[in-house]
Amino acid sequence: MEESRRFTVGYALAPKKKQSFIQPSLVNLACERGIDLVPIDTDRPLSVQGPFDCVLHKFYGEEWKAQLRDYAVKNPSLPIIDPPDAIERLHNRISMLQVVSELEIPQEKETFGIPSQIVVYDSMALSDYGAVGALRFPVIAKPLVADGSAKSHKMSLVYHRAGLLKLKPPLVLQEFVNHGGVIFKVYVVGDYVKCVKRKSLPDVSLEKLDSTEGSLSFSQVSNMTTQNRNNEEYYESLQLEAEMPPLSLLTDIARGLRQAMRLHLFNFDIIRDSKAGNHYYVIDINYFPGYAKMPSYETVLTDFFCHIVNKKSAEDGADSTVGGKGNEMKLLSSTYCGGTKDVESER
Ligand SMILES: O=P(O)(O)O[C@@H]1[C@@H](OP(=O)(O)O)[C@H](OP(=O)(O)O)[C@H](O)[C@H](OP(=O)(O)O)[C@H]1OP(=O)(O)O
Ligand SMILES: Nc1ncnc2c1ncn2[C@@H]1O[C@H](COP(=O)(O)OP(=O)(O)O)[C@@H](O)[C@H]1O
Ligand SMILES: [Mg+2]
Ligand SMILES: [Mg+2]
Image (cartoon, rainbow, N blue to C red):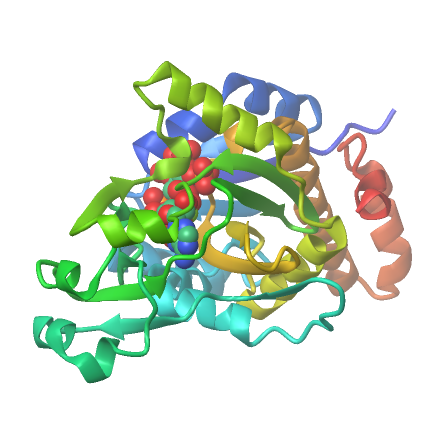
């Protein structure tokens, strides 16, 4: 019997990401299906490691980018998940959401957009009525840069103009939208889309707005555990009760973003306007998020790896042989990646 071909997916991940993503359950499932997940040593040239059938990375820096560029020139058919310049668009909270505004998706029963926002580069602008005047309070002040650092997740809910004065630009001031305390996180893995509910900031009533001064600082609220048991139960009940957005809307947005951004691995945060129940706001897009929190992440990611390496294998075969079609079939049938046949049809 013909020996099954194995594939190598090299990964370059920061230690925290490696710990959360490279779980034994993922490594074992991928291995059973013919994929070896192999760590990349980012301090050594890629060309002396591998060979790889795919490079997966969430790793930054000019040196790493130069390494990837060099390797891509030498291996033009190698899938790099994903190109650094495409990922960089998500490191700025303005360019990140611009792509949402540019999507051309027919909006019928449900509509979507992004909250009104402005970018502030210097402290003077915070006291300039002209610059801030058009915004409705409360607003959320978000660091402009979203580079994964703890600092880039530190935000403030600012109730009135006076609360802006102590903020440190560069930042984005974005109108806070009441959304029932529940956020929808939509995970995208290639063509696969999965939505989960998470807790979010509670609504701000007019009474609360009138009676509150200053601002409230917070960070990564959807991953936060509250100290107060009653609060925890309240948040859980909000999540249980919240109706999911229509899947067709989410898949349309996911597909549009995937194509426009040229990215395979990301999630986006979307909230439903409490006032107009059929209007949604996309508020955040994250590259290579915490997939281990997604149900069945091992299967979804393994299917994705199989799909990517089989596609490459078929393309390589077709390129290198006269009458490539027959060879492509042979290569596909001799690969060992149980279940990949179904990937396209399932999606
Ligand atoms: O750490 P996790 O598993 O909570 O994942 C973080 C994500 O949480 P989520 O999966 O959306 O709940 C998190 O999403 P949010 O920004 O919290 O919406 C980010 O994607 C974060 O990456 P970075 O700090 O922006 O580079 C992700 O952090 P890294 O795992 O990439 O460090
Ligand atoms: N415009 C908004 N209206 C209401 N809540 C928001 C808005 N923007 C952010 N939030 C809340 O703040 C949290 C963090 O904001 P987000 O832009 O997702 O930053 P991060 O990149 O740190 O996840 C969101 O998960 C949500 O709970
Ligand atoms: Mg977020
Ligand atoms: Mg984010």
